[in-house]
Image 1: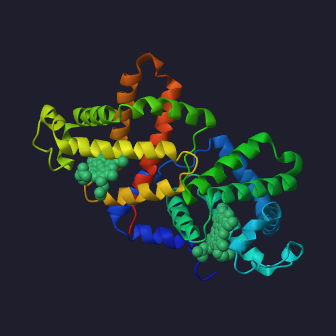
Image 2 (image 1 turned 135 degrees about the vertical axis):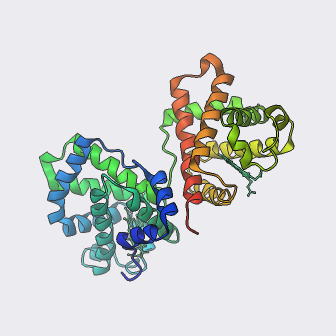
Image 3 (image 1 turned 30 degrees about the vertical axis):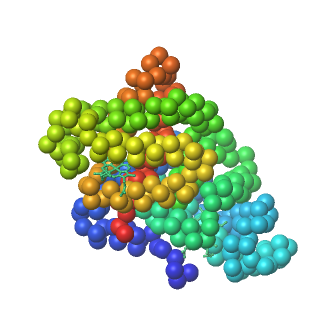
Length: 331
Ligand code: HEM
Ligand code: HEM
């Protein structure tokens, strides 16, 4: 229990970092829990009922979790060798169950202002890394939690309630362990378009960065080599080609990592850290996205549809969000 990170402490730490830092976190996490007003209402309403039974819900969720996934027990040193039939009587089990319920409580309280809570989850995710936590484990925990809630709430558990809780848990999961959330259809679109882009990587990279500087001439100063050059001179530099190539390589990696983004997310986090002194801001990444989408649309002409744009937008948002994580990290 000693090493647990109280959410309050994270908030205080962030606030004590000076005004610059708290503004940065605001920019990063603004409007992250995307529940409609009706969904927030449903979550709060169910939580009122759940709160009184939280210890039961925590226990039951964990018993279901280990029943469905006995192999995850090995991650918990305190009860890794306890036979399943005795798990229910094992006190150590409830320590972690309590922590998860506390996080759920915090998520419900943070519905309207998730900023500090997101920073807490980010830190929690880092701590779980050492425990080899995979996104799929969180999916299983969500399934176990949802089935416990459904059983508890019986007929008042509706599809809408499930959807609202699902969204809330997705937020927790996403902050703890990033994953690229493209649907199967969106992944297919990205893979199909990428095959075409891949043949023209060098052209697309260059075109994208020229568009980036054309849209925002003031960003030239971010690259010491370009700051006094005209657009047509920039085009001839090996630096433009070099950086464009690096960004295209990141896109290539993103496409390959669509099904398992964990390692790639850590790479992007590190890349964001390396951009701290460039100095890069999240806004610059938004401009890269605009330039990328423009370039792809120009390339694909009439075969570029709204669905294609949406899929690429989502993929790039993943790159952006992970780089921003690193960019705004304290370490
Ligand atoms: C929403 C999901 C989860 C939340 C909110 C959560 C929360 C926490 C918290 C607050 C701690 C104490 C943090 C620390 O002291 O560093 C912790 C520890 C731990 N977590 Fe999680 N956890 C979640 C999911 C998982 C899952 C799915 C696993 C494994 C399958 C896991 C494995 C562990 C282990 C092994 C520890 C250390 C032992 C312990 O404190 O009981 N966690 N968790
Ligand atoms: C998705 C977006 C981006 C990706 C994937 C990316 C990737 C990279 C990589 C891999 C490097 C070499 C890293 C190193 O060795 O430390 C780099 C360097 C650099 N990046 Fe980025 N970058 C991106 C966006 C930006 C933006 C928006 C700016 C400026 C606003 C920027 C400015 C720089 C500068 C100045 C360097 C050093 C010079 C160079 O290596 O070309 N980057 N970037």
